[in-house]
Image (cartoon, rainbow over all chains, first blue to last red; front, side, top):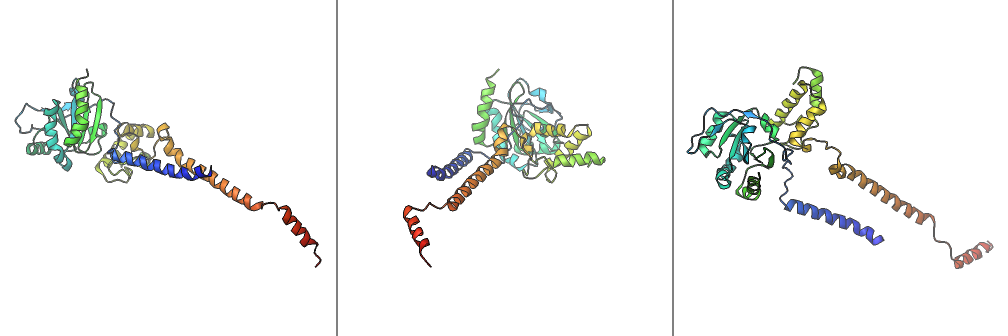
Length: 188
Length: 129
């Protein structure tokens, strides 16, 4: 009985150490806020587009869109801004995402001016099939955005299925985004 | 800032309870982040529109989750968080109490004298001075 009393704290200590070790090894990042919007419908919005489309060779880009425009297919929604440095980091990955998964990627310029957003896309390339401006940042708040870039996967019924905080990398696209997109695409 | 002092006071009180998502250890009341500013404005708009304090808080929790509350709600998922520390304190206090009581008892009741010792005492006490 006495011996057990001495062993209990050591066992508890080891259990806590193991828990932290496993949690931190599993890529757990405590600064990422869990999304309250995953599993919920996309918030209603009706956002204007920039004054002119970006210069790029490809099908015409839709300027301005609403949440209803996204229904009926799996869509990747990317919040970006011309003033956002990590957005420049993820941009090449974003350029490849649409073609590689055959999924429309739409861009919402968060707290940005139309001209600046287009200037950014002219310089780095346009990955979006549709572009909208959220100058007030209110739609961003409705999505639960707390910093750009943020990327959402929305299913055919308009339900948010995944949220990625921070710049996309080739690895996070392959590991997180693509499996979800492909699984949702084959669902009715 | 709202003109009506009562509304402004409510807005200030609520914004002290909401976490700034950008800096995470500051409330939106004290944070300088853009998003904190936007949320303060949003909060005031909700109050102006006639929301109760709880409705205004729920509006933001719906978007950002319980994480935005500096004081997490008491629910099954947070029982450990809320009741863990008091439970550890109680276990420790009970343990300390038992330990101290046992130690005192050992001190208060010395082992009874053996027959030999009694005999020696009897002899000593009977000795004339």
